[in-house]
Amino acid sequence: MFPVLGTVERSDRACTNLLGGKIIILVEGGGLALTAPQTFIEYLDSADDYFESSIYNVFVKALRILAMVITLVVSPLYIAIVAYHPDILPPIYILSIAQARATVPFNAFTETLLMEVLAGILREASIRLPKQVGAAVGIVGTIVIGQAAVAAGLVSPLLVIIISLSLMCSFAAPNYSITNALHILKFFLLILSGLLGLFGFVIGTIAISINMISVSSFGVPYLKPFAPFHLQGIFNFFLGNTGSEKDPKLSKTENKN
Image 1: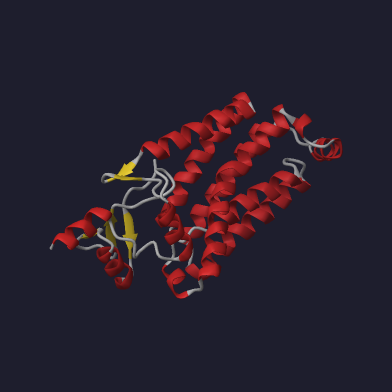
Image 2 (image 1 turned 180 degrees about the horizontal axis):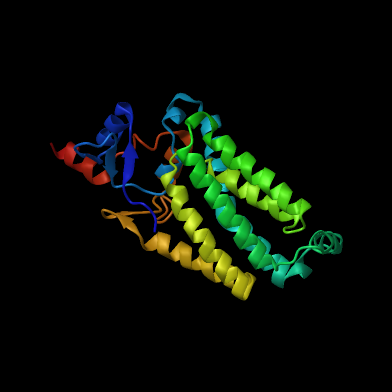
């Protein structure tokens, strides 16, 4: 489900990956280079991070991780809570949500699924549009159509906020290929949450976590340095030194030479 090969367009990034012990694959006729192995956190790493302060790197990378989590879980959580477990919310919010959904003809699962499909269509359309207006069309189009759906009584206002938030957070990753997997897994969580509520949401989250832990990219654990846990690797990622971290096996070979 998750990509295990990275793509590099800039020559400086390709050289950094080479110095870090990675393999660069150049395909004839292609404008991008492939890098291997590739871990999950490297999809959240931007080339511009190496020119920023360490404090800013810690802040922005924490925001990127939070944005990826929001992209994946906020819509399924809405279904699980509204459809199965509204009692975990304060009473005032339960009444507010019930009042907002009084005119909605669909249940929580159906309206969320319809809005997510609509957001996915707008997102794909924004990719094909010119770069200057593509992202704006994806975000603004979702909000405008969502507001029209609210005015027509088809969806609740809270769902429009959730779908718009999820869509905006999906653009936070520097490498867009990782969000493709998150969008597919979101629908997996949507179905489980619609069938089993919070129980299905927890089962789906655990299944995704187990899958990510078990995946490896050419022998390198996909969730490195979080699983297996490596404190120095975590520091390197948040401080902007991920690309310069060499493979320990490569370092031992250099020392012998």
